[in-house]
Image 1: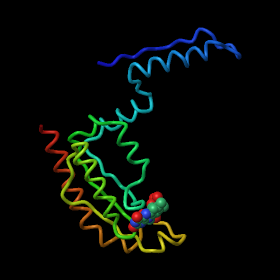
Image 2: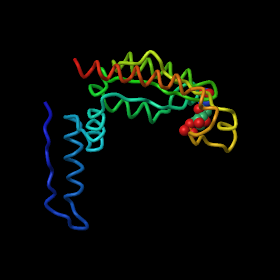
Image 3: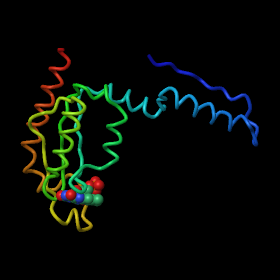
Image 4: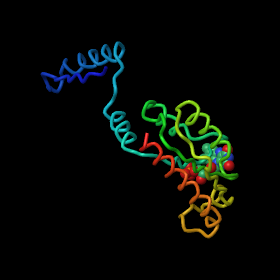
Length: 164
Ligand SMILES: Cc1cc2nc3c(=O)[nH]c(=O)nc-3n(C[C@H](O)[C@H](O)[C@H](O)COP(=O)(O)O)c2cc1C
């Protein structure tokens, strides 16, 4: 069961003791009861409003970026049964990043992963050079068909979930 406790500060004086005492009170509350920050609550509401999702992630040192793991780890129940597709990229399609995401999202968080997930290999100049993908490059066309299949599967999973 969760409760909302408002804390009203009775003084806003510039050099106030109330401010320090509110820190003391917040620390005491958070060490005894888990606090959900408003940002995490908004993140939770955002995710709960989705029927499915696509994680688009680069590979960083054979894994996926820490900021992505952090945003996943702030929630749990919201992820369970969430229809999911993975679109990873890197020099070799971000295959290690996809493996890691699969273990965490499908295994740990019980998301419902599509069988087809896309791995896009970036030309070297987009990694080592100054070029950055704009999304209209011809070399992306080879991924179009599989991307369509992946989206079709994601839609099927979302339909199935709505029927449950
Ligand atoms: C810290 C770091 C580590 C990377 N590690 C890998 C890697 O292990 N394998 C790979 O294929 N590409 C790797 N890359 C290349 C990235 O996948 C590629 O630069 C991608 O465009 C990064 O996405 P971003 O610019 O949107 O962050 C790495 C890039 C960075 C910045």
